[in-house]
Image (cartoon, rainbow, N blue to C red; front, side, top):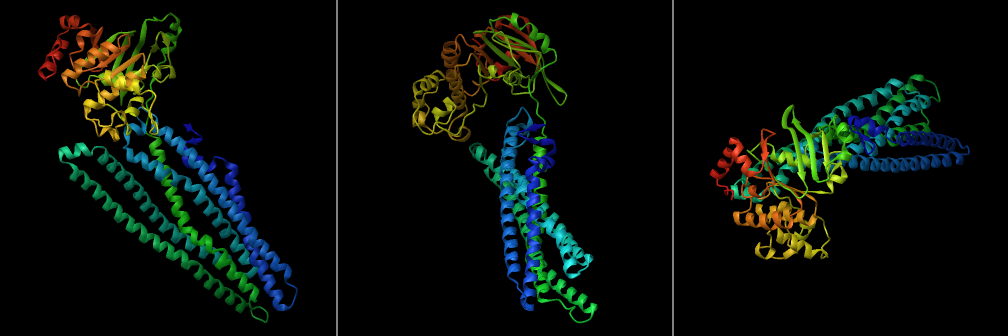
Length: 598
């Protein structure tokens, strides 16, 4: 799978090999900087020895200055390239993650809390791209000095290979072990932070209900307990980090001391006059170990930590991307249906056949066929769990249902996600979805930056048709009233009516209502049926899933679902006469306190 240039199945390899020539450029710039960095102490050695011997030395001091200038210039250029590549990859990975998070049904939207998605963008994407702008940069600035410095030390000073490589290898092993431990702390930190963010998000979004039920303290205790775990993990992480810093900062001093002692011992054993190290050699030796190698040696532990941390972020991203998604689609039999598309009945607003939906091998909807005539009113009823909401959600692409045929206004479509379908169907969910914005913006379903809308009259009319009059609903600032996150300032019935107003304002040809009258009182329901569904929406194609019986006598067709399949369909008198199961359903609904059918 590939999205926005990122292969989600092989994220580490793709992240490093995407824009490969620029990754190679980072390595080449680091190699060139290393060469100039090692030439500078050699030029300094020649300058010092010639100066003490009374020979002309001006050329070497200029050479040393040039090598140092080239070293720093190349290093700064390399830092700029790596930072730029990190930002480009962060945008590509962020775009891919953003698209992947929004994909559904299923996927991250259906499986993970909001806090996990937040941490994905806030923590894991920057952590993953740190492999480029941090780890790769540090690695390239470390590996070439570590590889080339032993060669220079052996050629210039006769220091054995085993001494240089052994010292660096031992230092690398100690830092590797500490970095692995630090990466585990980082991984736990990210997981705990994501979990806490999710809990806090749920706490904020449901604070009103939690207060009513008296569960605020219990919810807060969970957050506090998780925060304590975070704090204990952070203490261990900081302590381990301080040990790493101490080892890294003392490593250069130790190497300097060992190198000088080893050099003196080698020259002493060589014997004879003139075998002692010259001042230029000592200066070059201290320069290479104390200056040139100091940066990579200090960076070694954190390069390892960032690498492990970046890999853990990539692993978390891969897990999130790997959550399965079930997209609605047309079955293999759809081709035969398409062949007859030209002969479709133009009087049908929506026609589907062979709708099937499964989850983990369990059938949820089975062989559903629908033919909704333009301007008709259809009700979908059935026991809880019979599949009413799933049916309506499948019609708009909210599930991974498969269709043998999907047709709108007599024209075959590529399923419910076809753009020509999405623009003609309005949907009102049961929970009454709202955004944290003004009442006006919730009906228009857009953010207007505080400016009055030219459509205020139409917005007010849609609210009136939906029986939502701001003056009678304790909404003190009219259309400018702030709704609050998830409609915290509104009741369930108010949120449902705002959703109805939004669909009325959208003026779509087909309207799907998912039990969106369940939270309104009987009188309001009667007015909604008379003024909106049978009034303003007369001539629209309306399909409503409901437990309420008051609307059934007005329906052109009632579909009675049982265990995900259509048990029987027809008008109310026919169903009452033909189906004992439907009669039993009506009786139960009336016994449960629902309003009787007229």
